[in-house]
Length: 115
Length: 139
Image (cartoon, each protein chain N blue to C red):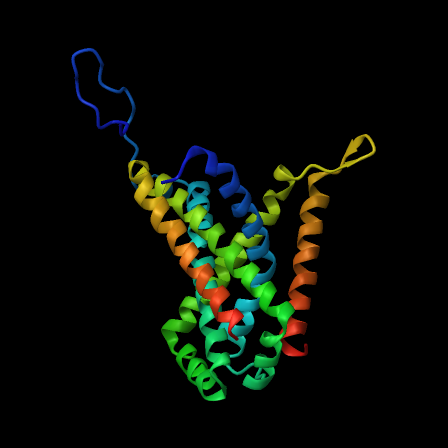
């Protein structure tokens, strides 16, 4: 159940996530999603493991993942309202969007805490 | 009550609101750009999911990481990732271009022109991207 009072906080997280996603995700996706699979750059798994294993990297990654996911959830929620005009499904949509963001954030926290 | 879905009741007239097509965003370029920017959220989410898959694979050792690279080389995964890269980039550009509407900086009594706020955001993008690349490749 989303109360009216939660909205300012959600917009704040949306903005913070928007900044983080804009600054960090393009380069990360370029490296891990394009350059490494295509073999343009070939860092070894052990090198990557030592980079990701650093406490600062892990903390940064959890923050990036969490904020980006909540940014995406919030924006997608409004995309459904505006694009498909289904605002009357408010509760279900909010639950699905933020629920997925919570699950994803928890997964990232678990993954990086136990890395 | 959903707008437009009303019917006559005893003391309440029918809502007088025009029906808006579900495909309203196809009518104009600016509407389409708006919905494209909104849809970028899906690809931001995918980027995070993909990143987590990679981190998980790296954590499970070199063989698992090789498997992930193999999986990522499939055409459909590459297409998804390249599309994501485009749309996450589109998100970044639209976000930085909008920054002057959200951030007001005063130097003494003069307001810093929006151009400089956007420009500083783009500069930050370059610097952060360079740091990310350096950390991943050399750090």
